[in-house]
Length: 64
Image 1 (tube, one colour):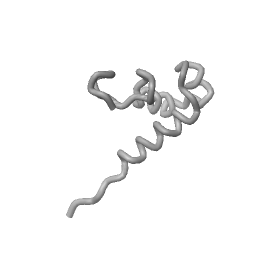
Image 2 (cartoon, helix red, strand yellow):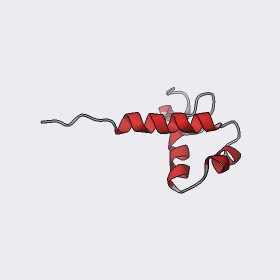
Image 3 (tube, rainbow, N blue to C red):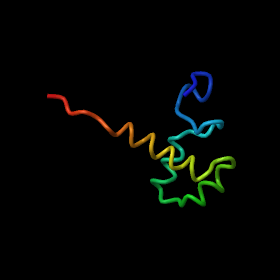
């Protein structure tokens, strides 16, 4: 994340493609192949990285 790129929102490394856009595409049922086609420069590895990022955000500790 870089405050100078896309207002500091998480992007795919080396691009201006928001991680949230990739996740939204997956949630809408788009295939990895369709996402790679729709976002030139994005790879299947980038899609996996977006999912790993989201997974990390979903990990939280319960508070007493």
